[in-house]
Image (cartoon, rainbow, N blue to C red):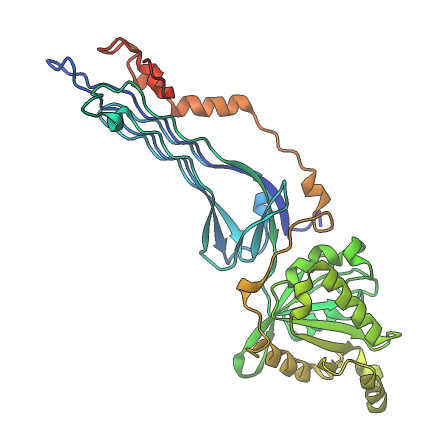
Length: 400
């Protein structure tokens, strides 16, 4: 995965902008010795926003931009002038991205469609200037509010591919061969296990110019729920699939036993996966005759639709498409996306390389940014008509 452009798990640090301080300014003009308070409010800090982008298929850009900081709000000035709001920071992510808290593993939000915007971190509100605190009994308020502080959070972005059909099977079960034969996808095919090292998507053509999307993930082995093999890491990509297509080769010792092992691994990963519609495809069936197929069918679960196929010869492919299309469009079998419960990130579902990534921040750089935003040259350091320094009000200091 290190050399691949497909990145589906990344850890970044986000920080919203802090609000600008309110101004504690008093109006000064010729022949107006006591003009009264006219300090403006500070600007709002920038938000950190997630936005879905259907043209993105990987989290690769965020792997090289791990610090996402929104702009700080500028302080208010005299003449009831409000400070400038901080710039919002928009994070473009692929559709199907789920966000977790990196510290606790708690599920935060998800982006499911193009153009969807979610305010991940809210910017701090700007402080009120002393103009807001004037009253009939306090006509010269010498205080103002500081801006709200920024919010900083380390998050994990996890991509879950959106597809109609998800392929599930042991290594060398023929998943990649099937995907390459019925779609334009060209996954790697070889005669050794784990040739598929990353998920693959393919658009399958159907009758009357219709189509559906099929996703292939690396093969699953027994014990994957305990961290063995590669399939556990990529099982997240079939959590959103409408139908699960289990593939078991015809030359397997016990087809039913292998199917039960695969189903158990899915249940250990996320119990809701077993509630999805399932179809069983017995691959490499070109070596079987009709009599042997009838004998093997007797040992398969009765409530599970099954199809004998051969991706090389094309046997049973159209029948498989018909069964999948019916399952995809069966409203009684569909699970509403809002009912999907995202399991929290635990030790088995985390990527060690990303969790151990250490963020390096420069305090001096942050100080320079603050100095640019809070430009003291805009203020007069001379004492006002009440004997107070103008710089005190930036921090909301009351001289009384």
